[in-house]
Length: 93
Image 1 (tube, rainbow, N blue to C red):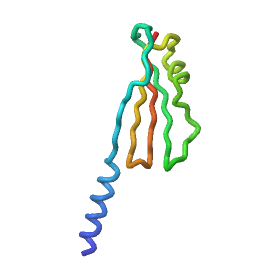
Image 2: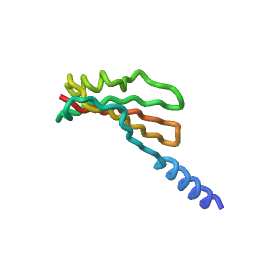
Image 3: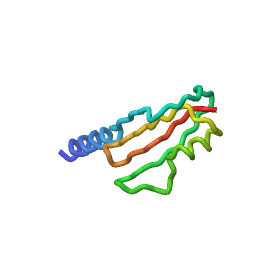
Image 4: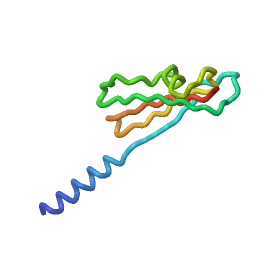
């Protein structure tokens, strides 16, 4: 009986740990041509608490060395709504 409980608990924990959802949505586009450079910045929120991270467009542009932004996308990844990662992805020159 104890082994069945442990197996069931293990399966439930593994299912929860691999349950996640990810979506990428466009935010904006400019009239600038799509460049070859890509910049990314991200921030993680755990149980509603944000850490000192910066997922802004400005930090993504700085990371990618981009001065003329072409497109901005936001990627959101959620693990059971408990851990949510926001990633800003920009392209440009």
